[in-house]
Length: 294
Ligand code: NAD
Image 1 (cartoon, rainbow, N blue to C red):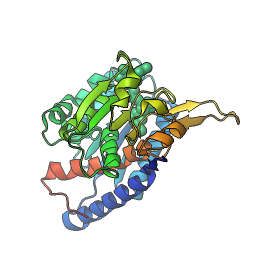
Image 2: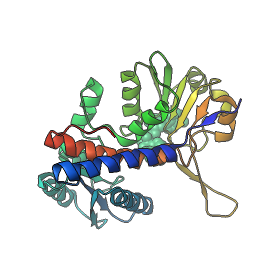
Image 3: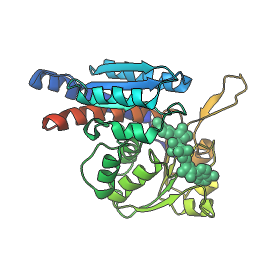
């Protein structure tokens, strides 16, 4: 069997195009353009690339991008002070603080300081609690992207066995909540799970969010399963530049799965597209505007 490849780049392009239409509508009908503030602390090279991509993609779809770069030795109080100013700024609809933060800053305290109505990453405890209790909320971007990727393959998920490997607050836990809300029977696996391959073999839907290159082998996958690979891992390559692989052994998965996302080009591009959609969602919710359908 050769699995279908779920094209996250094409889906992200479609989502961004729809968000651009929403932004044009908001400008024409309501006289404003949503503003997304991105805060970067320090010089982490991967974070700088992410932040640059976020700013570029915001501008491409007509969103206002507000960028704050702070030095690596910034104290938590200064960062929280900036967040409070962004919370109070009516032109800012979404606030994203790029993680990881330098070691002197506790990320939980920073996320707590963000106005939940502007928390476009969906990491604030109020938004996490809303997600857990089924209330409308800003949904974390990578998990939201995973659900949209699954939607490319499944019109309904009710009754399917879903296994999520990884229990982080930013990917594993929220994606498990979303799968539960979609009526899947959900198993959360993690570093202490016993006989992980056998657990995975029971999955109709398998989400890998671990950060271990090609850990999920072909014989862990149930024939015909849908596999979403969230992992992004850089490994050595013959040309010395390194290459990106996911948490799933992609070539092996192609022989067994019904559908699988590639790395790169699967969950990764969906994350920024969902962030931009969240900024529009936040802008509309704060103003009591019903989001127009494209
Ligand atoms: P994390 O380190 O916070 O969590 C990893 C999880 O994997 C933990 O819950 C841990 O219990 C589990 N784990 C570790 N070793 C394991 C093992 N041997 N067996 C089973 N479970 C194990 O990571 P994270 O922030 O959730 O990110 C996970 C991966 O997803 C990383 O590769 C990260 O780069 C990637 N990621 C991608 C995007 C994207 O945009 N596509 C976004 C966020 C994270």
